[in-house]
Image 1 (cartoon, protein in one colour):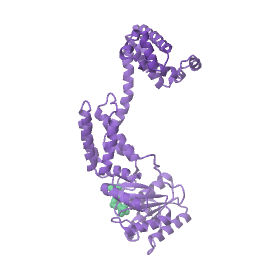
Image 2: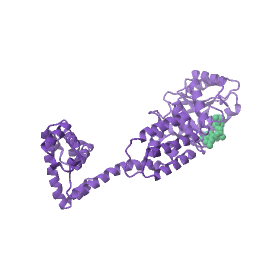
Image 3: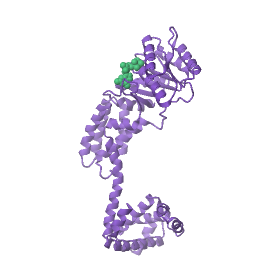
Image 4: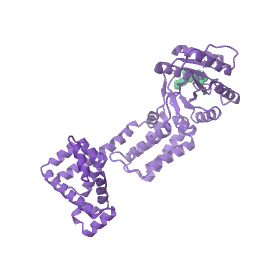
Length: 445
Ligand code: GDP
């Protein structure tokens, strides 16, 4: 699914991933192509525009992670934004069937795959959730459609409401609810009459059925191949009857995945399931991560960027180990160490990790070795100039005053930091000579 969109974005990012550095013009050019690709994939204009805007805002000013290309980084940002739009904010993905018999109203245009989807969902609830399911067709205009549902019910091994000629949709809905209660069913599906296009009479009928059946869910089934039309249909149905979710069918074809994106962005309704074929088990829950990955066709890059973040830290450690081995330890190194300590859970966290140091942690805390001290020391180092950090021995008394004031601290604290640094540098030098330091640091990593 989503092949065309995936391919289009693929070629855009191919170009981007080959570029060494990413200028703002590069980003703009690439995003223009992403926008075109989205539009051609039937994403609505407004949705595409908002999407590009969000990606641009996130891409601009973001530090490029080492060891991935800027293009790869943009791919990750596009991916994350796709997931964001597709997933929405923490919607429940399970169907609400907690109040037996729970009615599920199935609505949609004729030929969208509504009847097929109804049977697929019934099978799923029976097989996966062990639910007792009843299916009822309300399509009084098309006896063939009623029979079709009964046949499919038999295929998936659930019951269907006996067909009674001459009943209205509302009467069938009432009978289905009664039967579901008497028969001890957990779920009753009401498969409403399909229509060729939005039709007032049929809409009124769905409203009347809805009022009688009080469904826990109203699922709209739409053909994922119809792109923008699918979005319009969803907007109409939601306005008239109110839908709780969408099922996108025919996502197995060479669909233009844009429907999923626009659907979510325009209607604000969650896509609950996707249909992936004609067989009764060709139905999957909608997963934003996976769909976004397929849209981009570049899932690996996302993992790569995440990995690179970790690798970068490992590289930094390696670089420091080399410096220490040479006996080099300036204020920048010290700051990295302090940052690292804070990241690893501060003084308490670090000592807690070392066996037999639990008691020491408390003593150290009492002696003033705490996170506040770490933060103060980092602030002091930050208010030094580059030259001073490289060589803290240069510090004159007047500069010390300025640095302490810059960090909002006393000169005595700066002196303490300088003394500590000197001791550590001495120690590094000694250990560095024997090559011990490199080993020790490597082991720590
Ligand atoms: P209804 O008129 O909305 O009830 O549509 P049907 O359920 O009768 O489906 C119409 C046709 O679409 C049937 O031939 C189904 O087998 C087919 N169909 C339904 N869902 C899917 C799907 O997810 N993928 C594919 N490839 N075909 C589907």
